[in-house]
Length: 323
Image 1: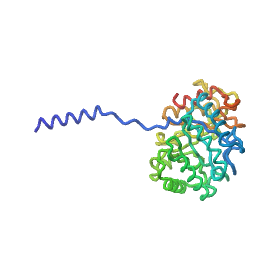
Image 2: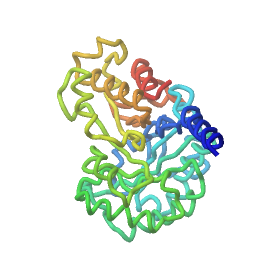
Image 3: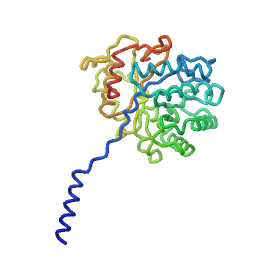
């Protein structure tokens, strides 16, 4: 009996020492860019990302998107595109054409994040019934596709934490067939802090989305920007995707260079952000990958494809992606 117990204890001890630890969760598989409307995505009407026109058919949208999405992949190394939606776009004839952007990205093996942008720019869902109809249509069309992710609302700054959690809980209940791991819950305010939504039991299992920008402060060191960013994420880095972060790409700034990144608001900000996401294995979806008239735009249209606006900005973003 003593011999049997001794062997059992030895086996148990060996299991403790040799059993592999589970891999840590991470979101760095999201290497993305936003494709945005030149008017910004807060529009009371159809959202029409740069390069498209309201008269485009599905076939035309698909052809144009093929060139743009291919550019995101080959020039940047992106595997994710974030696209805006609103009820005016989805609950109308435009949706039949606009779906060409989603279908193109999926055909290229990309992930797609579909995010609701409200029209009034007051931080609230404009019309709950229309919002529900929109999401019913979108989920019916793409809910079964594992490469499509859903962000119930962009920048819900009108809501208190409790009201925002309640709204998202209702979304999750209404669309319970969508795995929670394919839903990005925006941080409170301007998506600027995920600790509240991260701590909510009602939102367990979801991803979280954070926005972080260099025009929010005037720091000129990476250390100061890192200190600003860290408490916005708290203990939830493994669930968080920064799905908006960007800096001027058409003003001649150099974003690579180690110590030389300090001394300027935007180079230090972008270095700190990408250093942090790399170290924490977090995903980044840059704002914007393409948007005409936006100095932050990482690319510009070039024939049927794209051209890069700032090679050092691309290099620093790829560093943040872990590439």
